[in-house]
Image: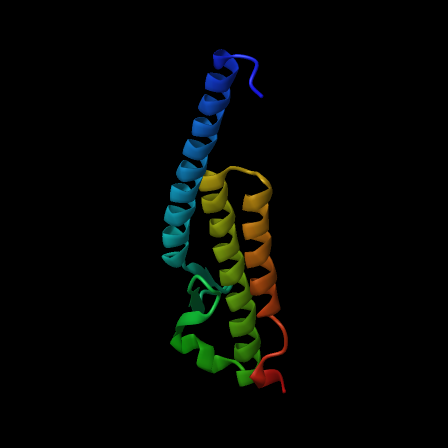
Length: 132
């Protein structure tokens, strides 16, 4: 099957290099996953009366309302909260993109991870209970 020992040795080295690259990529992916769990997205509205923080899945984990918010209709406040939450998710997606490219490069698997986050975060932006 093998023409000579040199060809067999070269094939063995290629397999070893391939295995090593897979092990290294798996370690980077594991570290990426752990770092992703720590990400939060933040945003505030234009007049800084609303600050929002979302966790790595895009769920709201922090909401600060300035007292000045009382000077406007509740419907306007609700709309601003939704808009600011979308902005916080956009911030989160930016961080996901940067971190993924840092750890995995800009290949197809990195783009798949980014697209997965994008679709999940955008999917959360449909009608809310408050809109029903």
